[in-house]
Image (cartoon, rainbow, N blue to C red):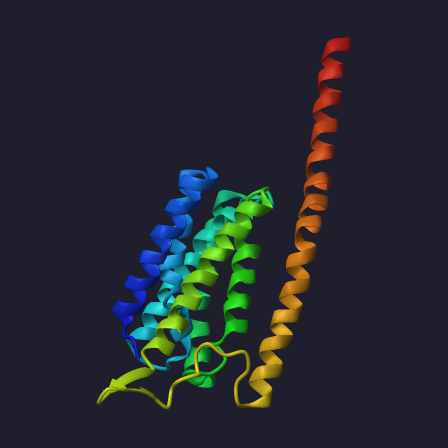
Length: 236
């Protein structure tokens, strides 16, 4: 099994390539590329949130809490909240993920369960899309892709390290096939995972339309009010 440093190094290298490639080939803004590269790097530790007590869980939850808090801050600005409210909300999100969610995961998850699976990678990518801010859906997809690539890099390394060269022969360890998988062994983890995936997929497909409607409800009255004020002052 690859260790913490190996996973982080591999996903960080992929993040550098992901950011540099988008900047060089597709003229993606540099700050967006840097953010996506960093997200890809730290996402390489996310599958280990099912590892129980120890360094992998602590580091993974710290990274996850930091990423979600930062992305949520920019996202909440779109709803017209005050800076104080945004700060309080982000602090609450960080503490909730860092401690409450970590305690639940420590108690109810099994290592190499469905968090080590391709559906889990898709779920993380969809959550990243919903957290990502901006009017350009393509840039939001780009940021979500960074999470998926980092997540899958962890699964890929786990499978590679489950191959062992022994006395001139390639031997499969018992852990082979437990990372890059679509389904797990228990029925409940599978049902729970694919239900979450289906719900999030529906929300992701509908969310851009919901946000556009929200902007229209907020912006159009403001524009009309400003226009009326200008007209009133001009008439006077």
